[in-house]
Length: 253
Image 1 (cartoon, rainbow, N blue to C red):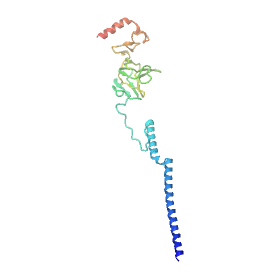
Image 2 (cartoon, one colour):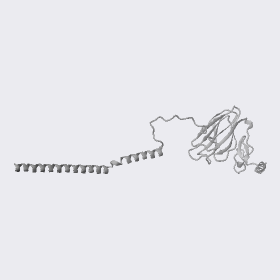
Image 3 (cartoon, rainbow, N blue to C red):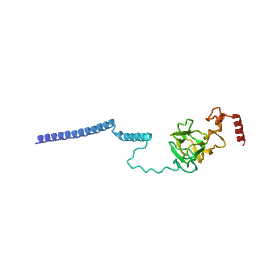
């Protein structure tokens, strides 16, 4: 009995030992497989997902900054009326009045288009006097400008101003005049301020510092006797010695 019993004990012990070794081997293989999965995860970049998300949001933010605000699914707020500082243009019916660029004497906003229509009762004509002008130039006024347009019979007469010198008085030949002020998106100035009034055709006039020719055209004194005729009748280049004396007398007064 002892012999067989002892044999069975040995067999049982060997089986237990083999089972223990199998369990240990299984645990080792499980750990190795876990490490292999972790290493594979690192090599494929799985932990980089949060950073990839941050990068995408950063790219979106940069794109938004360079192309405009990101789109929103919510309804945009209602657009309010323009502020008094940026409102401009209109129809002027009074026999006299004034108008100016937005924000004057401060800088006018970019990308402006202001249109004033001045109407006086016929047979009166519109006279415009620009008292100050600081508009991006120079001539031929391709960027910002103040423009006076009058309709005479079948043709339109357009006069455009820019720069830092106020132009001479404008005596139009129409009872309805369109005045346009335009600015681009870059350099700005203080703009302009102007006055208008209704005058009779026979009562056209210029300011004291100006010279009138051609039945109502006004010239600045700097354009008189400068060697370049500005009047159709060349009156601005005639009797220059007398005119220079008259200018000196005016300056002394």
